Image (cartoon, rainbow, N blue to C red; front, top):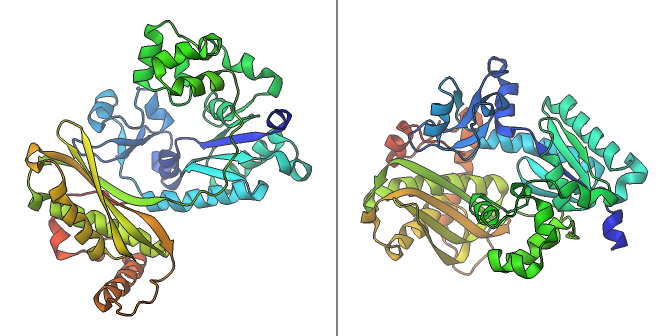
Length: 397
């Protein structure tokens, strides 16, 4: 327990990351209400600048509702690859101070700086240096929480945004958590929050003061974890440099699709996006998964394991297409499709006695296509079957 209390954990969270990158890159957007996302009827807010948050616009909100709240908002299509490039530079800064960096997404990470203090000072000093480097080198801001555990550091980083720094000393953890509303509890969403408030729980302190059995009666087996976190008991280590477990692409449609033929084109488009990312990363995959979300918002997934790792559009698409008969009737109406790959492997295909020459050629074409898109723009090359699809203005990743 002494070791856990001695730890210094940082949680660094970039401020409105996607929107801030867009405002940085285009001075005309600075100080304006900016929404990153698709403008279509079923578009979703990927990021909201602080100027537009004043109107109640939040990420994951439907674009329809967001524009009702702020009709003058400027909607910018997402540039996921660009955000990934900027994210790499942010994480490069993190790694200057410690090798123990656990990324949660493009824009946030845990850092264990316990062993870095002799070189860079205590957690507060390190957090200030990281925030300063992000500001000076990238013209962006991030907020940081410094605490003896991951949970408390994450809660702290969110309390003084943007450009905040909140420090919680080991002896102050219970005092810090006690008055916070239960919505600050990690993992407590709207549904769980409503259940807890209906039973009289208002603050994290209420959760800490309640017997484990009572919380388990409301939250099931998760109740024990909630009780421990509410009391500030969290000795989970920072797990450095998690490798990507899967690569995927999704798309929500303006109108429900109701036939297999209608699904083929978006599946091909998504297979191409996934293949491009595999090619750029030098990866191959042995498992293909298809996700369908129906008109009633229920989601189903089906997957298949392949005999050999693949990395080209056609192979991924063929596998995805072959999974469709295993889904409930598509005539119900499908509002979203997704293609993802997992069981990832680095490097070229292992040599076999009877190599698949056609697939090898397809992978060479995939790599060449990627190079051409790098030089001339991502839409410089488009499959004929996807021309109409691109003409509708679908977002790429």
